[in-house]
Length: 268
Image 1 (spheres, rainbow, N blue to C red):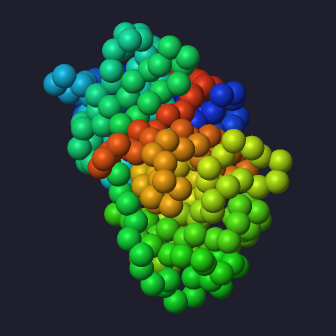
Image 2: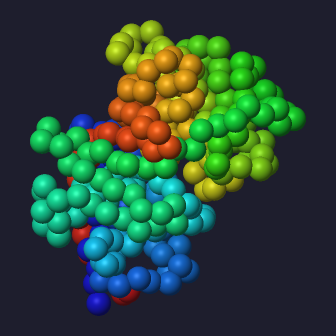
């Protein structure tokens, strides 16, 4: 038996940018241990496993180390694959049943994909001991979202230049550490806020573009800036743009996607 396996760069308008995700197309759900083995083999920040379920699709996400409860870029990649493969009509909504409830994706006429996700607004919290030393920068503000530690720094250039101690960050009790600042670094325009995401405890030293992090960053910066529609950029080496809209207790995340590989998974 063989299974289709795609690799897609999400939150990207051209290959080899944004965040790569593997998408495994299943005819039925598979055991978690098997999914974890495939994700280890792919060795990307996330591998998505999707199978038909009811009026939509079941969707799970695995890093090389663990299954996660919410992932934006691999959801965007999965929706892109369903439309590109003809499994879903271009104008049809993708509906995903996940550990975070029902998530949807809609394809706009210009090719952008809009995800509807739950908001996970952070609440102010004391910085864990050793955080500043692990980051190599002094936090201006710290908070906790449902999944992550959120750290505001003084300016975008500080965010961009961070070289944190990943081993020390891995000891913190959270899925990952979101580092953010208002504005954009020198030479970048049209951006409201920037971020980077470090998840060494989850098997992802630095994630190139983290959709789910913007479920926390969207509400944070919407409240700070007094606007619900924002443009974000993640300042990883690959980089990527996320359009963020906060609508009540939901966050809409828009991005583009590019297929880079299609193949067959053998010996399944």
